[in-house]
Image (cartoon, rainbow, N blue to C red):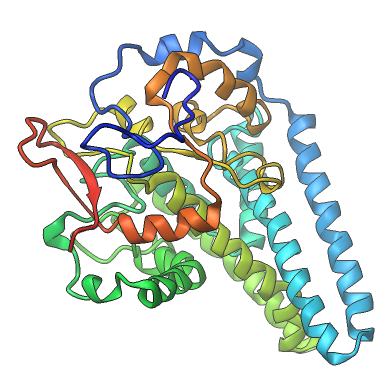
Length: 383
């Protein structure tokens, strides 16, 4: 595997579950967070308001150009071509707006500027426009970063142990079943997570990102949930007024299609960052923050890496230093690879292939048979 972290050769270790990569070591690493930070040039931790806003302005200009072309020219095309054009618009606009989503995500991590009020203001506006409850998701996502890799406390894509797998899983682990699973996950996964905490950490009562009294939040956070809800209601009302003025079909073409693409990418990116046969998961007897933060993987989305502001291929560095601006993350990733060595995971498997592989192989986790480390769990697809 080596210091670079590329792992394309078939593993020899009999414990390896993937034919693409070896398992990430689960032992406590021989380095500290401080030693990792020392390897990163100090300027990588500096946030610049002009530079951060330049990415917002650039993305919004591109999105506006797509909107202008779509609303002024697509209706002039004959019907078969217009359907194709609206589909192409939805995909392209959705990719750009996913980048906008990432910038709002930066605000939630206080990586946009040195001013929390500015980060929250920008994040609230951008996320609300994409029907994301900014503060609600900010707080649950912060808990995800605090508990990554923990079977008991992580917040998103928490793997099931074998005894917790639904009886339907064995009937869905086939090509048609996996296609259905992915379609549902990529289209409905994000709203189901926000509304019903599907794929999230189990709570002892109903958990919803729109509910200020949800067990996801502490008492001091609940007032901000009302602000998030107000932002969503304002945008929803605006969409309603546009539907009255322009028609529901127009709104669905201009806004609904791109939003569906954004939501699909959010789920896919998060799923592939934290779901991999090589990644360990820990119970309370083994988990610690650093090993949990290292239990994630960088992925290669080609040109979309740039459009998505490199959230895809610098995720390991992001989990280690989440307040670092995205425009320094590539440099930081290169700097930490020699320190992390085998603890750094990069999978360059094409995204579509990886998506189907992970939904096939990553069904439940369990400790290795006869392994002394019973608190370390790995994905296993034997049903």
